[in-house]
Image (cartoon, helix red, strand yellow):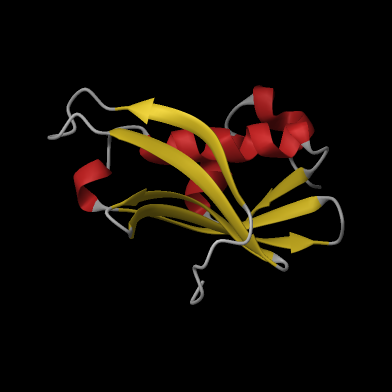
Length: 119
C-alpha cells in the first residue's frame, strides 16, 4: 500500500505484550483504499506488523500476505491480527479466503473458523 493516507481506519483491538521492551500498548488497526486493505500495527509512524488483503466481490476478503517485525515475532501478534480479521469479517458478514500460508494454516487448523472460510 504505497499510499498510506488514512481513508478508513478502524481500531479493532488492543494488545499488550508483557515482554515487549517498552511495555507499549499496540493497537491493531485497519485501513482500506478501494479494494485493497490491511490490518496493521503502527509505531512511531511505521507499520511494524501488517496483514494485507483484497476484496473479492462483495463478501470476500482475500488475505494475501502477513509481515511482522522481528522484535514482535513469536509473541502472538500474527495470530492476534488473524483474529482481528475474523472479528471484522463476522461483524460485516464477510468470508475470508486465506492465500497467505500463515493465515491459511491458522484458519484451516481449527473448526472454530469453518464458517468464515470462503470455499
